[in-house]
Amino acid sequence: MRTSRRVFSSPWPLPLPALALALFAGAAGATSLVSACGHSTAAATPQIDAGIEDAVSEPGPPYTQTLLDSAHIGSDSSKPDFQKASAGVELTGGPFAQVTLVVDLVSPCFPWSNWQTDPPPAGQDWPADCDAFDRNFEMSLVTPEAADASDASDAPPALELVRAITPFGGPEHIEQDVTDVFNFVRGPRTFQVIIPTYSDSAGQVSGSNGGWYVSAHLAVTPGAPPANVLAVTSLYYASVTSGETIADIPFTVPAGTTSSRLEYRVTGHGGADDPSSSCDGPAEEFCQRLHHLYLDDQSIEQVTPWRTNCSKLCTLVDGGPGGSTGQYCEQNPCGDPASVRASRANWCPGSETPPYQWTPTALSTPGPHTFRFAIDGIYPGGDWRVSATVYAYGD
Image (tube, rainbow, N blue to C red):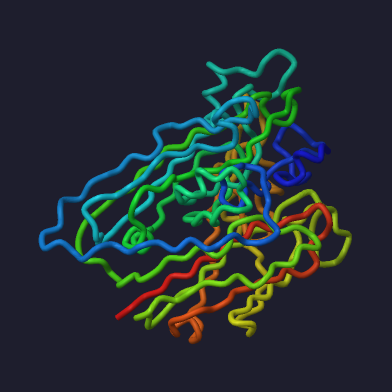
């Protein structure tokens, strides 16, 4: 296993035609997501933005803003589409009664009829364009300051909108309500999608030049906002590895705030092989770790992120890649059904991971605050993708 692939991949489970260890489903992105493979051991200054201006008397008609149209995300590090796709976004006509982010992911692996026009190269088991594994699938807004920063560690953290995992070589459709975000954020932003896709040069466990196609748009309805959003503050967005200590992250709750919400998105990844009883398999993604969250140096929650319902994403269907016999999972066509069904560290292949949410009383108090988290027992070689966001509301 190459060190450069460890952050993004884990060695179990396998696509259908390969019964040997291979890399898949890992973390992606730097703190600001300007780089697809950077890290930060300390959070940068949280982003704080100006709110939407007063409502217009007559809202305009609904409209759609296209962000990505079948944009390719590839595994060739020499190409500009390596592991990411991005687009500028700036909504007009606010405030908004509803804003929905709609994303569609397409895989060259499936349906199997694709293999007629894109067959595996000679001596290989997968079409070259096919990424047969599951990968992190993350969407965020990046500030102009972060997009222009030469050093990602000094940039404000991106604002994560969606945390998901791709299927094993299959399509995925996501719809996410982002009304509160766009009733606060104004001015230009960069919408960014990260998929840490990798290739197998031999074409034995995945395609030799694998990738994905992503389309995304915002469905926008101007009108009276459902809430008085005073702030949307990204506190943290990065990977946490063994031995890292996260310092207190300062932020400010604005004047007029009467309630706030903390969102904590987290998923476990990496190629660690922890032999302890807290792990069900040979990778961090199969380990149960205790997470501690603190607000103003006071504990607000302890959670053990763990998903046990992955079996719902495996409807067995007869047939297989290239017309082979056997059965595959309809929602995860290139995955070993046993792997698809396995419980994991707060994610399932082909599924969005919703955030944990809390509304601690202390967050209703305007003024300075601090946030901190800690994760017990990350095994060397493993990592956890973490983002934290505070939403502040007035009456």
